[in-house]
Image 1 (cartoon, rainbow, N blue to C red):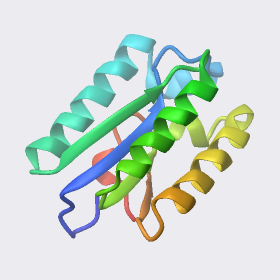
Image 2: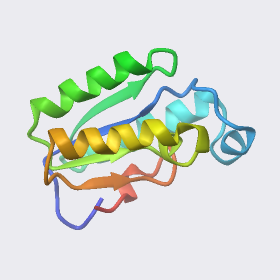
Image 3: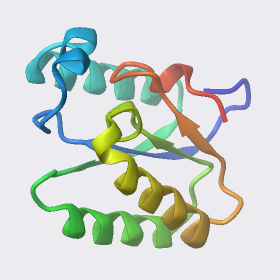
Image 4: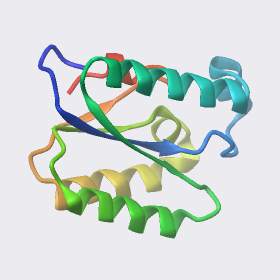
Length: 127
């Protein structure tokens, strides 16, 4: 997170059981390890006084996930929006990443986007 303290952030990505390439698992761990890293990262953010709204997309229900994200974006009030590395760095997820970015621009104009470098990197993400 940047030096500016945000009050409320939306953090989104995939559920940790999403099919991922072996190199991603080697970098970040098993499904259970990734889940634990995400929880710990979000807990650190909350301890810093920032409200987190977390949404983890089920890879088997992408369209439902996109509708849910759109609803969350329309609720508004976010000081920043984070999109997880699992959505961004896996080439087969590029189209979903583009849809999410465009959805953010349309439904939350002017809200900074943040990108972490893994399941435990949201606390270090920069606008």
